[in-house]
Amino acid sequence: MKFTIVITTYNRLSLLRRSIASALAQSVPCEIVVADDCSSDGTEAYICSLREELCARGDNRLVYHRNSHNMGHAATINAGVKVATGDWIKPVDDDDYLATNCIEEITQAIALRPQAVICSCQAAQVDVNQHELSRTRKTGPGKVFYIPQEDIHYGMLLEQIPFGTPIQVAFRRDAFLKSGGWDSRLDVNFDDIDSWVKIAQFGDAIFINHCLAYRTVWPGGYNKKFSLQRRLDTHIELKEKIYTLVDEKHRQNIPSIRAFRNYLKLHWALVAAKQRSLSITCRFALPAAFYIPAWKLLFTAILTRYNQQFLLHKQLDKNIWVWTKLSILVGEDKCSTCSYFHNIRNYLRLRHSWSALKQGKFTIAIKLAFPAVFSFPAWKLFIKSMISSHQSQKDSLIRRLVLIN
Image (tube, rainbow, N blue to C red; front, side):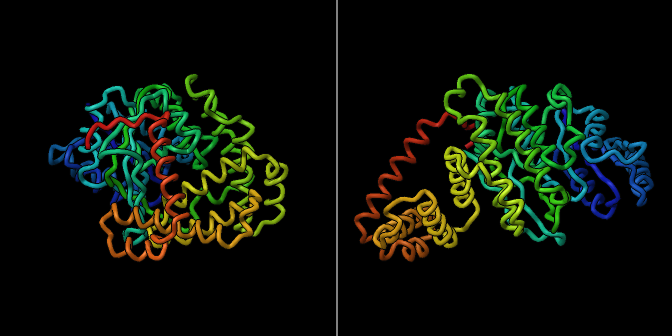
């Protein structure tokens, strides 16, 4: 199995140096293709000089491709993959970089599941000074697991299988070429996710619960320059594409495509509301706000994100706020009673105390548990939740099969 690291770049030579250095430093040597979108900052001269220096030492791994004119990110990665000779491709944007053991770990994981066509790992988000801000979450059991092809699109449709950004992903070259590559029409507006959706038609997916890459987070990312309407339209188009690819065995378990369209309208209405764009908020939310199945999808997404993104001591207050808001939105009669909220708060304290205990954070566990531990209604809610969670995991239709514990 041969790997090629494809680094896409455009006028960011200072950052490109770091990406190339991380590729050259891999514990498993591999081909490195620098795909240049017609830079004008001295990138070509630098790469040519570096190639000569490496070749003089007998190292012919570095390959340079330069577009004849500026074509955009999607076309540039397509060009880089076309030039590559590896069986597998690891895409890297010029402002991102790899851990030295990245290719080695991915290679070992893929060897355990030859049917795989796409692989995703954890990544750390760093600022412009390389200070770590956060890490992507673990996505399933063990250090390495795989999801069979027939379950992938179902999981992606329900947003339970996050492949992540390009720096997290590697893919098989032949599957990429069969899929038609990246869509230039989408350029940096869901074009990566669109590619993962298409590649996943041809085999299984592997996930590595280990940080092997670093993604630079920039204020005002390029995709945010697109209008909210365009981002909504593309998101709906992508969801519709995934919907058509869901395996037949999952068809009876998914909501209607109308529910997903309206869910996305509600989602982007919230984004518009955060940006204080009242007219856009109303335009997106109506008439979607009157479609109950869309609200169910939205509530599930909100609760999932809150559970994933906050530390234990922050999760508690945030989840209390979410539960309160959801109760008001669905109009439950009990939402007006103080005892109801009191029981919910105590239940959440027990739940997060249990999470802290499992992580060995005993001080936090004790702090969260009192006085909730003396609330009988809270314990009833906690036990019901544990049973429900166990049943949900037991009946899960998305198979996550461990390769390495």
